[in-house]
Image (cartoon, rainbow, N blue to C red; front, side, top):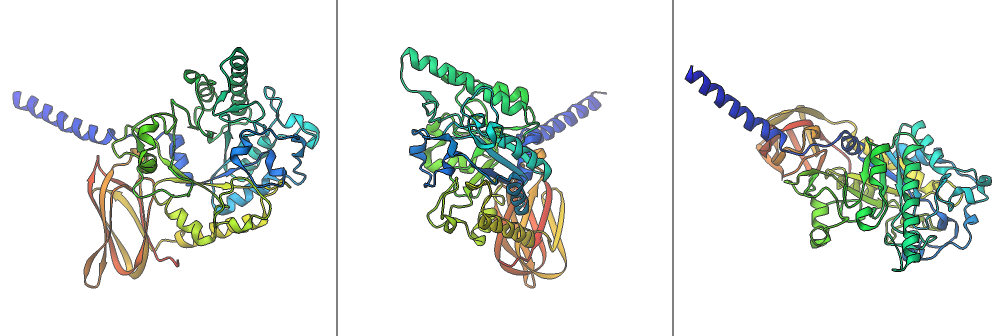
Length: 463
């Protein structure tokens, strides 16, 4: 009886270690899973200064009110055209700037008088947020809303604050905070379920003298992505606006906020922590890679500007960006720029379609694929073939478990190394010099819990 008891205790102890090893890795929420599964996210920037015929000047626009808000007059506005273009590129989430640095709101706000209610366009009845969300749902894309409250040139707010330390400034700050909370209430409660609410530059909470936006979000959009304030971030900025992150980029992070505080740690070494994450981080918080489509050849245009087509990224650059963002375990957020007519320019539409077609061409039809668990997976081809791309995916619903792995290919003279790496995560894409192979072997050298490979694919892609 004593031996049986002892055996039972040993079994329970072993099971406990095994279970602990599997559950110690942070796991994503359903919203985070949906976010990473989307892979490609469009963000549409639209604001009053699109209509002034001048180049966008961020520093100036943050401190200079627009003289006449009735310049806003997109006579051919067609959000269906915007979203159709995003759909053709393969985007699964689309975000609209409901407010940006001017403070002007692209919807019918009851709390912000500086909104579409004030303009002559559509006799003050327009609601671009409504049009946008409806177009997203028409084309099967999850809508999101970007809310800029850190800067507001109309209300004189800069870096979250009304300038001054007198009673006027205090009263103005209280008014602004209440207005921001009201806008977040409107935007999170009147447009159905949203994939993400994005506070660009963050959102100071009450602990820093700002509005309480997190509680409003949690009440109205419990199933969405919150990005971000000093308390919470469900995703993190990837440390640059190049549309890429270095390898490795882990989906875990040591803090519950991304970069709204603790800058002495987060910002050092050229944002290394934001770019790479932390394999031992307690919080699941994958990186995003962001860039504007018009970011080539010295450009970096988040808003439409006249005669700016030379800055549209070439197709090969976009493909490289895709490999070094989606293929490095992050989502890729691409900035798109509707023009003063209310349309996405035709040059941009064509490039997006070309890009979506190229992604399908390169990665739509693997030569072979498998999946499975354990420390070794061998992918056998039906016949020897020339391979130059491998895509791996973990089942990240169970967390990022793989810590070190090796890829090898079987040639006519035996096994040859292809790549040795660390993180796989949602997706790892590796491009390499073409090899003539009959088998490809994945060996997991280190993991936390049993490795679970959702997908292991090989390709021969023209590039």
